[in-house]
Length: 218
Image (cartoon, rainbow, N blue to C red; front, top):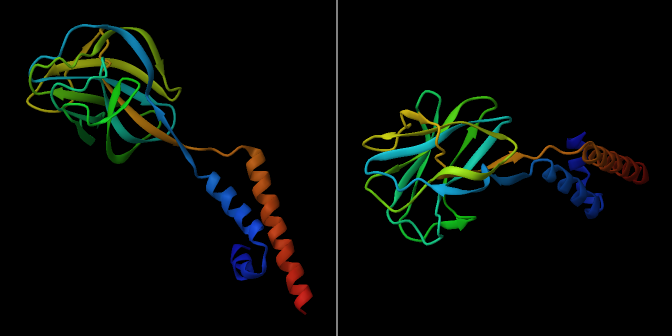
């Protein structure tokens, strides 16, 4: 049917073609979200030299992670640069970036973000987000959260910390929070039934118009 419609596209009203294109495009739109939407609390100090910090999480649906972020408590920039990444349950690094020292990276709600190559996080699988502090720094993490609001898709299972020569999965779990890292993600929009109905109605109208054009031409 779509091939037939394409053949008749030059004779159809542009407004109808625009409508069909808009409806199809809307069905594939994605909305950017934040894993940690809001957090506040007390800091347990600053990271030690050669330490890694982060948390384990699962997602209730497939998501695409697009950016990684790190807590900037006073919005005054990082004292040093920090490598940050997401690992799968086997400790394989899936994507990483570097939060630069200073204020150059994008600041959103006390987190500074860096763009990464998009990765797919699949439903129900376990992942770890962590960052590395090569030297001692004043870039604190929240170790006791009084407020924590997560995206509805995200569940945190463990906080982690450890020592390492570079970015890796922290070896130790802890009862303290480790809200330094964060990430942005997208979920493909699921069209409402009314959207599908409108799309089908529009395609039906396009088909009817194409048929009428043929009859008129005969």
